[in-house]
Length: 268
Image 1 (cartoon, helix red, strand yellow):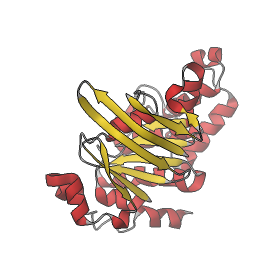
Image 2 (cartoon, rainbow, N blue to C red):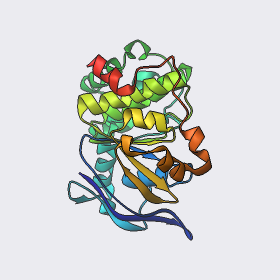
Image 3 (cartoon, rainbow, N blue to C red):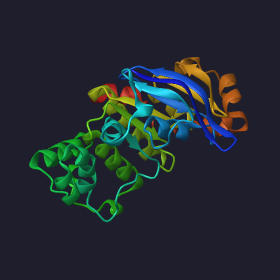
Image 4 (tube, one colour):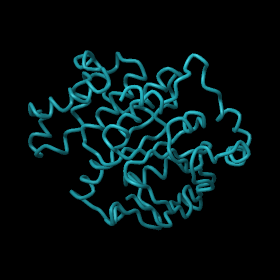
């Protein structure tokens, strides 16, 4: 169980996240929604400890994550993987090597510094690529891939960390509708087939409703909605997004009638 208790993050006098308390069950798929500047990214970065809370505590199965340092903090970041909007992969390296970067914390320090990959690590990386039909791209330079392909490489890299949680920070923000679905299907597959807890920042409400079992709505750093997607009414969405509500509720193109949940069920 991931528990946030009265978590606040201040930047000067601004409270980017303000007194947030949440409990996230293992194996859930949670969408964090809200307009830009609502505090969504700051929240995820605090969970991963890329940022420290100004106040409050974050616990994982009773362990106080906010107190971790050194090797224990590195171990937490291995168990709590991040997927970023900007992909954060190395364009000049091939796809397989980018995925193998997720295995560095499973290796001894000398081997990790020299990137002396074991046969076991290569097998795990290739298996991850195979999960998403990307094995044929293993030797290709990452910079030659489409945005959607690069994001799936980043997801494979997160998977080989063998995490308990994946935090996805606006992973589809720069993608077209087709690649949006491919990336969200990839995250849903990790959740459904591997039981990995997914916490995903999203702006598009239709996508959030299709893929997430629970929505957490943020505005001005606070949680203003927490519930099932079907309980988020249009009126509640307009209260959450204000003038951006129409943009957030953009309809899914008619050429993509299968929702993410239906797609995963069909693939299972």
